[in-house]
Amino acid sequence: MSTDDRGPGPEPTAPTGVPPVRVPLRVVVVDDHAMFRTGVKAEIGRSVQVVGEAADVESAVATVLATRPDVVLLDVHLPGGGGTEVLRRVHEKAADQRFLALSVSDAAEDVIGVIRAGARGYVTKSINGAELVDAIARVAEGDAVFSPRLAGFVLDAFSGAIDVASVDEDLDRLSVREREVLRLIARGYAYKEVAKELFISVKTVETHVSSVLRKLQLSNRHQLTRWATDRRLV
Image 1: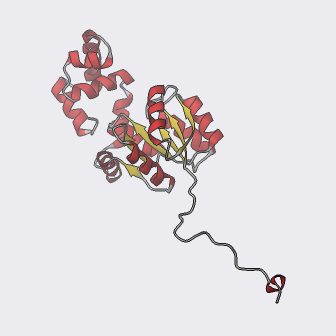
Image 2: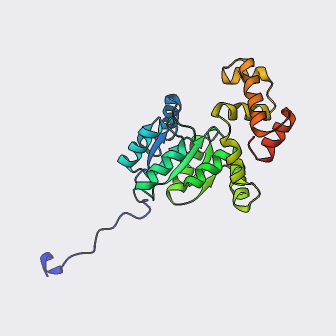
Image 3: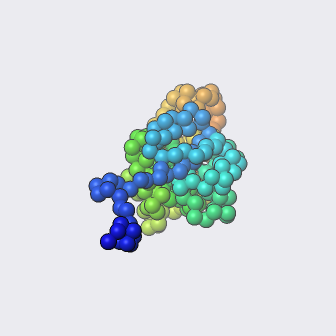
């Protein structure tokens, strides 16, 4: 029998023991600090493909909808409305887009706010590169990912241990700067330390503290600290 009469041979197969080729996950990095975005890209760039970046709400929405990445790394505090606004606007047109919040904030209202808005996870900026790549992969696969301490906030919110509506209502009375002062004071910072941290004067710190106490109907710094602690804001 000639070679031509033998019919087609078996389909070629990949050599045994060779893992399948994996396409890198596509990621967009959203943060208003250019140096932080550069650092994140340097940390994760060998493991994922960074297909875009943005510094505010408008550019974030446009970039995410144009590139449709596997995962968006999203900061909570952004010019133009914050991370929740990015989530809301993107999900209006791409409901299946997956987001992982990556923020310096570990305050309960920030964590709960972005999760309620549709993020699949929340990790803080103390995370290392390998952990971040793992978190991205897990979110891309549909898992929910949280730093250990932050997971407790979410569980408490769903169990009713934290009155989320009350927290939101009270905090809505405060400006962004007043919230920053509130957290630092509640963490035990002296007025001079708060001033140094926020690059404002001691007199301005005193003004903000007085305003916070008045809006929350509290009498002193001790009550303010307990109020913030009870709501897991520090």
